[in-house]
Amino acid sequence: MYEALVITPVKDSLNTTIETIKSIHQSEGNFLYCIYNDFSTEETTLRLEEIKAKYNFELINLSEITQTPSPNYRFVLQMAQQKALELNIPLIIVESDVEVKKNTLKDLNRYSKELGNCGMVAAITEDYQGKINFPYLNFKSEKKTIVKTRHSLSFCCTLLTLELLQKYDFKTLSAEKHWYDVSISRKSVQLGLNNYLIVSMGVLHKPHSSRPWKQLKYENPIKYYFLKLTKRLDRI
Image (cartoon, rainbow, N blue to C red; front, side, top):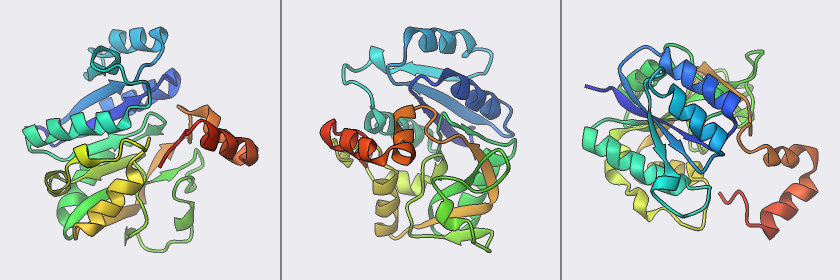
């Protein structure tokens, strides 16, 4: 019996993706791991095909399922929700710019059962020096080890409980958006569930490795917002 379904949506960024895969492969516990390959290059796709047996993951190439151009996060979430519900297990999302520790996935699962009325529970993100980084910079001064929060939880490394999956149909997610961590975090609270951030449990996060153009938000914010508005990129 699997403890949870773990997924990583992938759009190139091959080096960081492989580091994510390796970290999940060495995790404690029994997890079903699926990579959703969102129209990556041929090089990335071939490499994922080569290593899927070695690192024991299921590879779903979206190019074989849909013609909708990347990003297809909504479609990925819908497929993952269906699989998790069929298996009657929670869903853990680990992004392709994150590395987990051996106990991260098992502890997320444990916390989801121990914490009251849990809808979502996330590990905090850190840099190579172990300092809290994006997207949880607003928790840098937090003294508690576990925080119940109404702030949106990022999907960097986050568990969605079976109760949330049963209550909220991802088919209702807006097709006008690209990313859904804000929408789902808010819906979890609206449904009367609690969202928790584990401040004492960090994962390595290399922000925007899979979407390097987003670095413009910090390097050239005028150009970033121009692209965001004119090309309708990064809709949250």
